[in-house]
Length: 133
Image 1 (cartoon, rainbow, N blue to C red):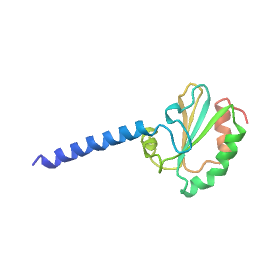
Image 2: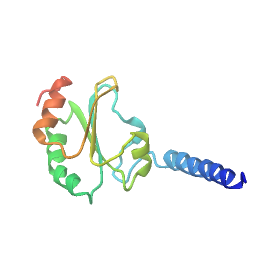
Image 3: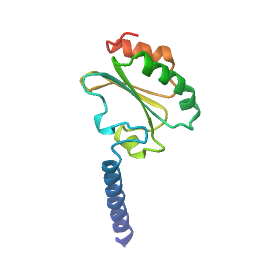
Image 4: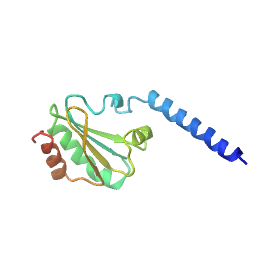
């Protein structure tokens, strides 16, 4: 009778080990992001977790590119494709994409938003964290 429960336990351990070792092996994405350095120490950081093929994520892509240039040197704006880097979805507790997480310069999470986020709302959130446009 306890055999199916044992199988599920063994399966859970195997999957957990695979995820752990995959996370350790993929500290850098194909774009060169050091996942272990996120959030960026000493800088307000916005991490957008989504996928390049998700419609709202595609709508946000030009906004994020603009924000990355506009805030260069003052804040870190990072996009992570969770379809290519699945372990990061688990790490950041993502339930839906896109999700934007904002961290203060000390690396403490200050705000989280799920869904499309407009440029104006991103600017407002960054301003609340002390980073002016």
